[in-house]
Amino acid sequence: MLANEKIAIAAHLHVLLRRKTGRVTDTEWMVSNREYALEIVRFAREKAVEDGHADLGIMANRLADILALTAPAQAAPAPRTVQAKAAPESGFNLFTASRSFADSESLQTPRYVAGLR
Image 1 (cartoon, rainbow, N blue to C red):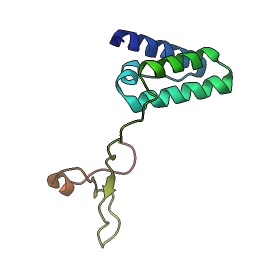
Image 2: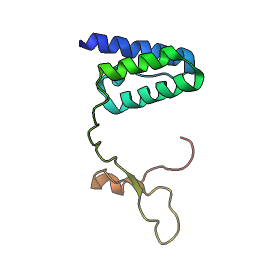
Image 3: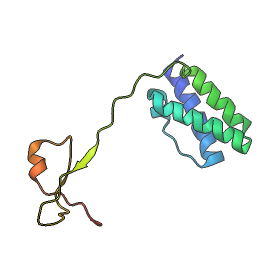
Image 4: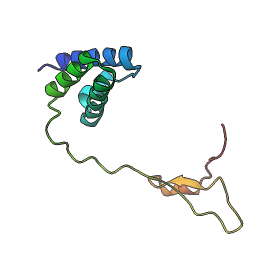
């Protein structure tokens, strides 16, 4: 199937979801990302049953068929975590939090953590 046809089916599902549930989706991401497409299909099927929208279920099934979402999914990479440094002995310091995947230079740079900017 052509990429344009896949996007057209995803766009049709997007319009139905927007009109019937208020949910806004990304059609290009739906076609290119398997996990996102699986979640959108699951959500559409759930809402089709809950709210009685047969056309929503039909379009979700068409998208699942066209993207071959019935095959087993590949393992997703582990997400990156955000960690904070231990508070100094003198008391809690809001400026010491840093990300675990940052380089060592940015670990020494204070970071604003609390309140509005």
